[in-house]
Image (tube, rainbow, N blue to C red):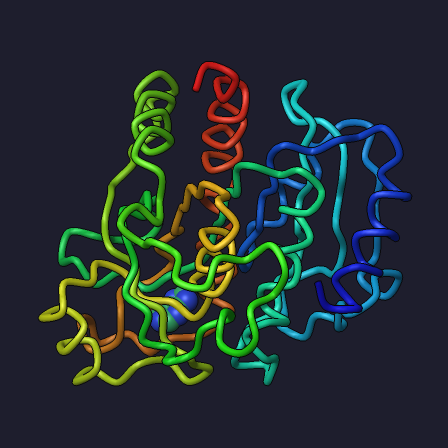
Length: 273
Ligand code: HPA
């Protein structure tokens, strides 16, 4: 295990005390509200965690929040490390490896994404069925990190049983939930219309700049994943609108409450799986 991972595990487990999280939740742009729903919260700023840089993307905080959500011990990552900020893929995946080391077996990832499927109008929530890694980066490159698998199977990156559960919760809560394929690009520029047409042909329903490094690292450690994209805008060239990060943050706020209910519902029912 790398030195910073080991030190991060020491610091975070000490700060969490008797909170032993089984579920970790990664919050995307403008989706920070879930962190406020955590009870008996222990807040650990990134500056206190070895190897964690300060987050740079607007709309992203920089803290881990441990506590309970609907009575279940969780650890929330409020602020992620994007490759477009210049972080190496193993930095983007450091929180995921830390979660696995702390005993987390389920990772819930959320992100903001542009809608490619023509029926997707913001705000829409999309369950991630699968992804296409067009970042051309992978956090497993290099010497095998202790605890990682060298060649992890990626047939079920987003756990089928968890996806079924998410749909059940959505039905029960009357929250519209689409399902589709997420394509991850490096960013930080938004896509061109020609790139969006390419992604359409490749089978992508949504496009974003995150999530994939974390999910790959999770699968390399046997952690099962569930992913939600908040479709915050129609992808470039599919409307005459220009894209802006502000629009992304505003649209994210509109579905944050629904996403929070979905995640709480899934977390409550997890013990059944
Ligand atoms: N493209 C890439 N990333 C995004 C988008 C988009 O249109 N919207 C939110 N994140």
